[in-house]
Image (cartoon, rainbow, N blue to C red; front, side, top):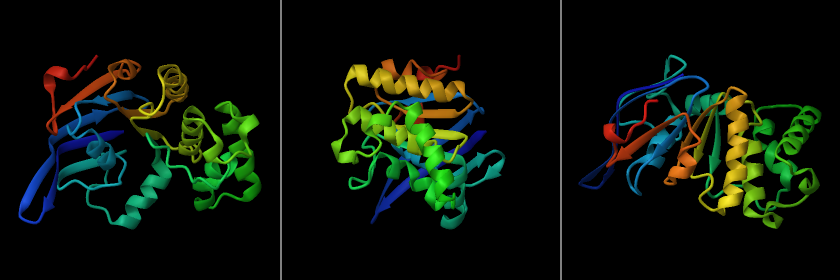
Amino acid sequence: MIRTESLHRVYRKGEVSVSALSDITLRIEAGEFVAVTGASGSGKSTLLNVLGCLDQPTAGSYRINGQDVSMLADQELSAIRNREIGFVFQSFNLIPHLNVLENIEIPLFYHGVPRRERRRRCIELIDRVGLRERITHASSELSGGECQRVAIARAVANAPAIILADEPTGNLDRDTGKEIMALFQEMHASGKTLIIVTHDMQIASYADRIIRLDGGRLDENGQDDS
């Protein structure tokens, strides 16, 4: 499903060039659960942004389902994000004045799903993440774990094949983090392709495979291909 070949990402600030990713070649199969680990500044979030079509590589290729997306225009990348990819972030990225249902509806609204169908699908997702009793609460009234459950439901609302998560348990206590990872395991069991960035090796251990980055490069000694 996901293929990168000799992928590089360089940021330029005036006369200075900073290499965030260097020569990344990856294969991630459909339905696989992969954790990306590494120290702070190792390139984990940059890689996730490129895989999520939020950023573009400076060099190399990136293919999703055989389509090279590395040089597409912003509008084309946006269409792929809406169709193929769901995002879960450490900071949740919920809209504070909207309630649980309204936050989950957002991607369906922009996808042109009729209101009645949006509501039906969102209520199913709310039940799935165990938030029916909080359905009319604003995100500002929710706990961190509840906010992340809303974010997960929103990420899968359009039924994307790929879920990308950047430190999804980073702002949560250990027990709540386990509950969130149980939801990710359910998504994996349903056939989703999951890629999670984490610095926590206990969280990474939920994955089928662990990939480690070091200084923007794949650390071959730290990569588990089992």
